[in-house]
Length: 144
Image 1: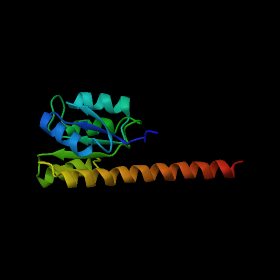
Image 2: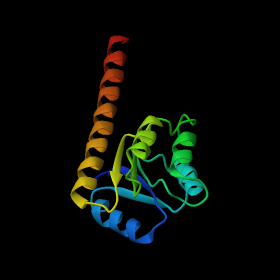
Image 3: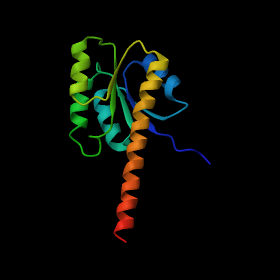
Image 4: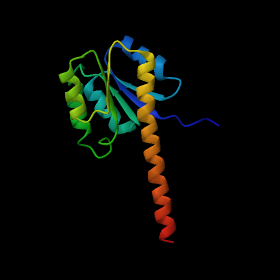
C-alpha cells in the first residue's frame, strides 16, 4: 500500500535550484513546481499543498507579492511558506517573516538545512491536523 506523502509546492525560476530541491526533497514529499509568481499562486490554489517553498526574485511578480496574495484566499492563507532566496540581507528576511513566512533559507542551498527546516514545518502541519481531527472526534462523541 502506497503511503500518502505530504505535498510541497516549489516556486522557483532557476532550473538548477529546482533540480537541487527535487533531489533534496523528492524522496520524502510529493512535489509540484511553478516557475513564476503567477503560476505559483494558481498552482497553490488548485493543488493546496501542505507547504510552499518560495523564491523572492521571480518573473511576473516577486515572492513578497505572492505571499501577500496567497494570504487573501481562505484556501491558501494558512499554508506555511518557507522563503528560499539569495537575498541575505536581514531586512529581506524580516520583510518575509513579517508578511507571514514561516521560515527563511539562504541560497546556495545546504541540503541538510533545507531538509531539516522543511521537516519541521511538515511536522507542525501534521500535528495540527491530528489535533483538529481529535478535537472533532471528541466534539462528535460529546454530542452523541
